[in-house]
Image (tube, rainbow over all chains, first blue to last red; front, side):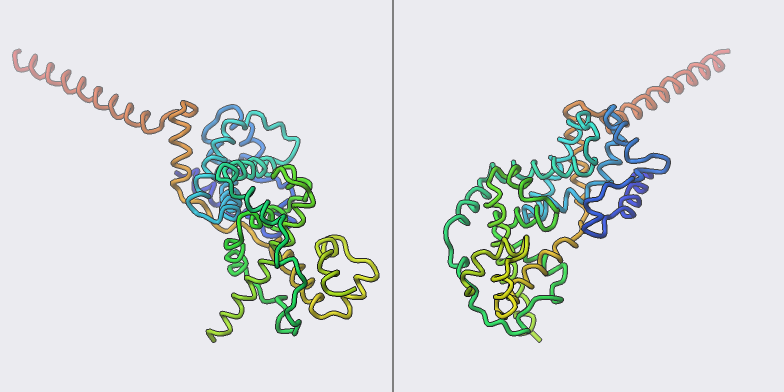
Length: 223
Length: 108
């Protein structure tokens, strides 16, 4: 139990604070006297305790990814579990060609995408968004300065707005704008074209803009 | 260039900037400049979202149980119960030995 507490503390201390830090490889301390690299090596050799340490270090990021991509707590928990089970089974194949967090993250993304493919959600949405929509026309809103969102979005509102995006939009937006994947990587993972990924992202941002404006208007009405 | 034409190529403009004509429209059209500003702002704020929530402890319990079931890790609760059983047997043997000693003392 004591080891778990230490892991929790270490996890809290290494929480990534900025987008840059999210992607930058880090030299992590897994537990006192044990670096993350050592924990990985031991976990590769079958050390279950070191695997638990790795779970402690990465559970938050993997769970957040699953939660943002699915917008559902129960599904996110199941997928986090599945991602770490796959990690345990595949950790011996990790060769250190990329950062461990990047490798694990990609594994988790694939677990979520596989799950969503089984549900059939993204494909439907991808096709839907290829159809010309009313949204594609020019914006008619009159651009008074009060209409500009800049400076008015807080984390909670944005998280909520992302959650209410249609699944196809949400996945691309989370992968590109939140997680920092490039369009070519997304296209490869999603099995779609780069153009489709770009188009989806644009529509996702447009939809978010509308959602955030509605939220702001509702707040103003309540005041 | 009008708003409709500008917004048709907006994804490309946001990603890699516009040409002279597009930039000129952007400078003169409040609707389109507000739109571009908002979309860029949304993308910037999204980059700053950090993982905030830990999964419920039952997620780890589930992982552990599955790995135990698959025989990939040792069954902790089995080990614990096996330990308890061993302790009980040792206690019983010790008690019987003490009883035998007492019986022998009483007979003597």
